[in-house]
Length: 404
Image 1: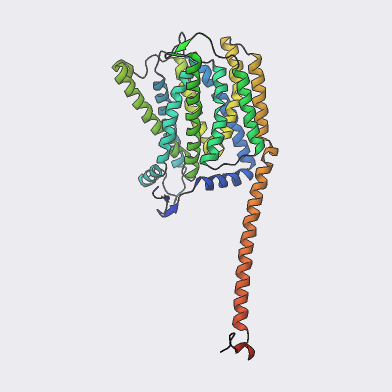
Image 2: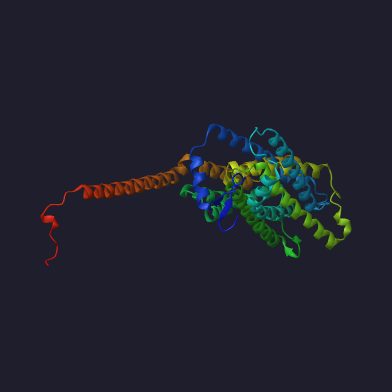
């Protein structure tokens, strides 16, 4: 993309790049006409995301030995990205074989190069995801799995603000109130959740936890919004081809992290399989499936829906954590979960979208009124010109307006 222009992958003509406001309004119209098939897809995405996101903190906890990781978290992230790259390649090969005769080959060099140019922005969320995936392991050193899941729900509010700023997404007052309820629910769960008398990185546990929490919330939120914008702005490009670029960039960034770690700690840390177990292999598979599912959320659904579906996984994580590891489900956690579910119901309630739909309707009526007024003025102007041209000029009308 150069000077706000993009090149068509078929005819190579220059087109105006869509703005964030254009993408936002197009998505709003698409969302209002959602089909039953799309609803079924959303349900499947939410159910799958709940299972995968709910298992992720538990698998991370199971991979710890004496409260520490015997493996490099960056190596897990690298192997996860490689797994997703392999999946994207396999799906591209299957999709290419289903191409009809006469259609442009999906795996041709020209198509691949053009798609790489149009999707170069995916390098930004790939870098942010690489940082976030490392932070997931760091957060496990401070909090139990259920608390990590609740803290990640803070991303919903940050994502809503970023969507409004970057993609010009509109939210009703009821939806903002629902997000406020979400923060209250998280705050209720976090009461008296910090252990006392422990330090990490030379900082009190509360200070270190707060610093990592801020980064843990901001970085993936920005990555999710930017990823949704990048995927939706190239909507006609195959999602598997876009995933190939996204995961390829992610693998490169994580590999650079492994090289940097080897330079600092020595060549022995370059062994990416060192310290891995069955739990870490399951963790890699779970992270890969979760990343693949997230791309479908960002392209075909919504980032807010993705984060709220992750919220549903909180109750599963809390119950499983209590059953497997003996973590206590406090009254604060139960109350916090209840408030979070109320917030989710309020945010997606049809009543919360009435005002926004009315605004869309008013805007459409205003556009129609303006177009009719423009047409009427043009018709009147044309009629006046026609009347003037066909009007017979009388003797009195030939007289000059001013005396001579």
